[in-house]
Image 1 (cartoon, rainbow, N blue to C red):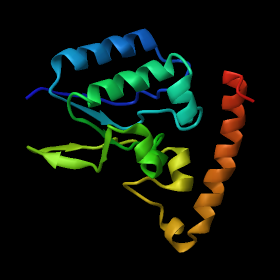
Image 2: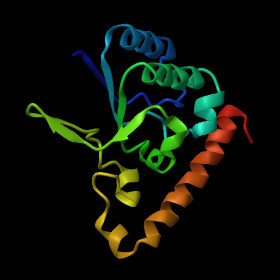
Image 3: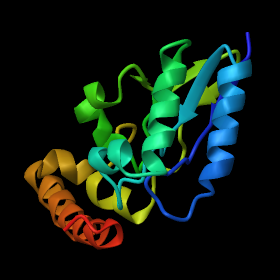
Image 4: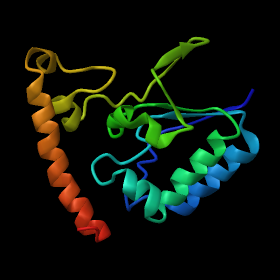
Length: 160
């Protein structure tokens, strides 16, 4: 079985080389039996599901991965830039969200759990201790940062 593994697409970020991303996805489509995405499938800070499904070139990447997932397993382990998608899993079907796992002595996870954003809001793998102690505080911080970054995304993509 051929399992292709990739991470950090940051789909929705305007600095990626989307021609190369789509060429890689064509290879996955043609050659892989399974596709495993190890986090940061989308760019949490500068995108949302509307951008990922309606704005080019991001919508082409989203649709290509969905097309692959209709033919073979595509599994996503959430990363620090896309973990809220766990709340909206139906919006990326048929891509499956799975937890980190170990197989044949290899541990599969995103790994970047400790950037500044994760410090404030935690991650699915490592929720912050004070998020449990003061559960409303991380949500307020997330909403604060999300509102600021959404304003920037609206400016970048002329959506405002």
